[in-house]
Image 1 (cartoon, one colour):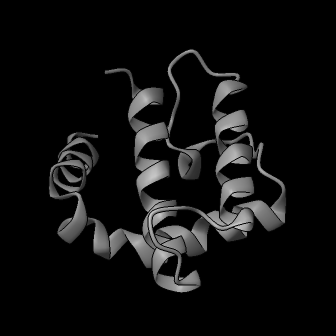
Image 2: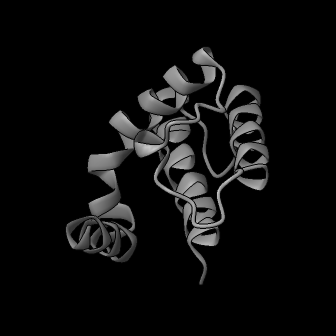
Length: 100
């Protein structure tokens, strides 16, 4: 699985966790979270790098400021919960992060 596919899957998982916990949705995304996911996926599609870096390590900020803040909030909320809901993805992320 490519890095962008992994990032896309992780984004979906994290936004689903945050939407469920914060907006009390069950099995579906609210309109705001669905829009955020669509925006983030468009940004991934348009990444100018051949070897995509992590967004936080990138010099090109392709997210608008309000969307960047929204994604940070999602990650802050969903990150710790990923270990419980998607332990394989969370451990794989930690392993890849440690290899850098």
